[in-house]
Image (cartoon, rainbow, N blue to C red; front, side):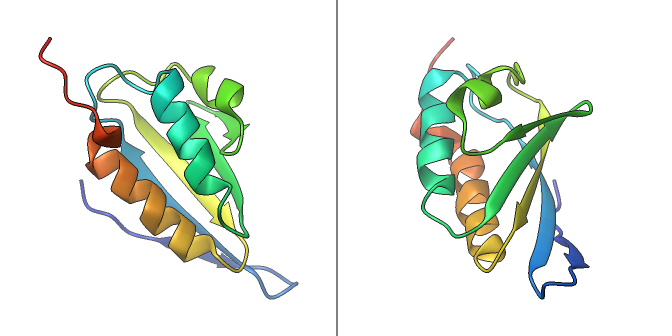
Length: 106
């Protein structure tokens, strides 16, 4: 999957970036990866939103992320707005690529 930032400038000078990220870990975005996503997202000065099939949730809410029911293979649209938008997306994308440090033989 090719990564590309979709950028939108705002009147207040902040930037909004959007990337698609594929869930690669075998068990999907269950509680542990959702908690890791939230911990990572919360470390940045950026508003993070995650979308699946028109359902948009906060990237800083474990319960919100779990309601997306993102199993292995699901593509999520992650949007970050704020001064750390790019850094936040880079870090979150790294989690997806590393399969949230999970390795299961199912």
